[in-house]
Image (tube, rainbow, N blue to C red; front, side):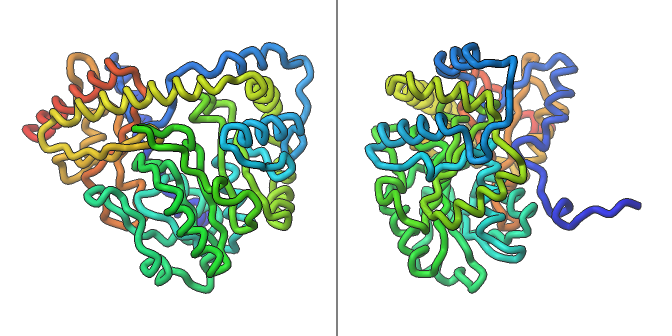
Length: 399
């Protein structure tokens, strides 16, 4: 009998992908499957990225420096500074294989096994996997759909800070809720980190994807030189470049940055080709690209919410950022329902792939009747998907 580590045993399956085998089986049966489970943008990436790929010297593809290609770090810093009106330095960035690797680096660099990081449930499900792999305990404070996912007061957060609490991890705009928190909330969390000697890890992967005239809310508008701040970012979502696997860490603390670099050196480098193409893209990209992307997602959000309002028993939340919303369904077990849709149900030759929301809560027993919906499909497909949802709920209820 081979030995399995507790870390692997305790790493939860992804609620986003755990039913993928059923989706594949549905497709093999000839059933068209609408994917609302995963934040995979369907929009075209900037043409400048494709041009950058063509211009790259693909006949020779060496390792990149572990901290990232200098030209890319400069281009990224310039783009951040120009679009946000701030001043960051190229040397303060470390390039990672997506935001995910950056988060694993942070968990490892900031925490010893058994140390704690505060998060707010519901939270991005992969945080739980990163924590299990790193031996870190996530201390979860609950927010709820009924109150708009308000972050708890300072007094409540303080009660959960212990001698082993190393950081607060905050995603803004939020995955999975779609809330865009005002920068005053970020400032409040940063003040707590100052008081207790913690790091504020800001996941700003969706930073520019904000709606209803909500402005960009970034910790960088408060400070660009605070050693208590780290910003996690990526080209994946805003530029539809998930497969490029290019992320960044903004780390003002030279001491912390040095330790993260040691971790980066152990894996050699982030993708060379993606960095080269992204460098070319960032140097030519017009601000109108993000404006257009934002408008498309806002229209899709409105279409999704309008369709959900017509489904009896469904409660939905109006997101102001990212491209997700949480919805409460008239079922006791959303995972069982999601399984039913893929395994046992079709409507006019179609079915639906949902992400059960209980996997976004680390507090047991919460979110059992909720799902996360990603509005990353064209509007007519979103309307069709909710028709399938409505038919599926009726069939599930009367089965």
